[in-house]
Length: 277
Image (cartoon, rainbow, N blue to C red; front, side, top):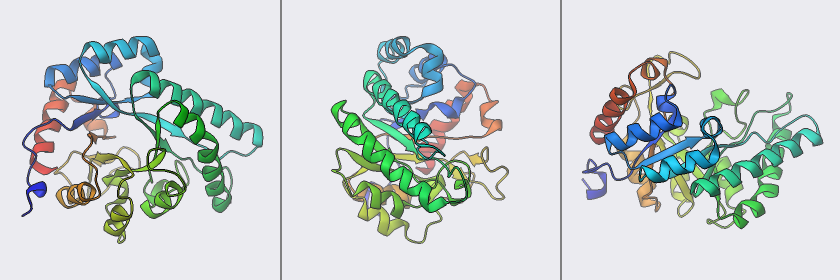
């Protein structure tokens, strides 16, 4: 077995995506990471808003953490031109927040169609990224397009395969726009490994959680690594072969995990990360 496919020997790349401990405030999540010696944190905008941008930045810096990404931008499609512009304006604010927090990447959850015209919605996504990119570049923030599993096409994103995300990202320089590989959303794709290779040099994030069988809930059904069917090691090896050695975010929507005491959730997350990722 190749060396880079072996179990990780440290947690130096491990990042807590804030949603995994959703009941924690930003302060609690930061303090929890510090106690657990988790070096990275991925922030969510609503948690930042609750704490305040300046206070969020101070808390993260004082704890010695690094911000792996800010979630989320995107949600570009809308029924009217005015609404679409409002989405762009909000994305510009998200870019400002990412820059202030020291996050190199703004994760784009691109948004659903406002009607039944999914092709038009995908064009709106492309146009939205085109409008946002120059501002993001000027702020030193990269845009990471995260394809979501097709079951989310009607609710959260019309960008549903890594191939779609690659096609959009390839219109730009890798330092401007790239892709985020979330195993929960892409593990099933028969073209996955070819598309990861295609994304070489422009993978901006790698997210892990597990696919439970049966899936208990459309949104809240993600599992802790090792509780489902995803081959994390093979996918990690592929993204590393494609040049990505950045932070690995654990991002889990699951009420049972949310209801755990945060420190217990972090301890389990670290254990499963070392065992399975």
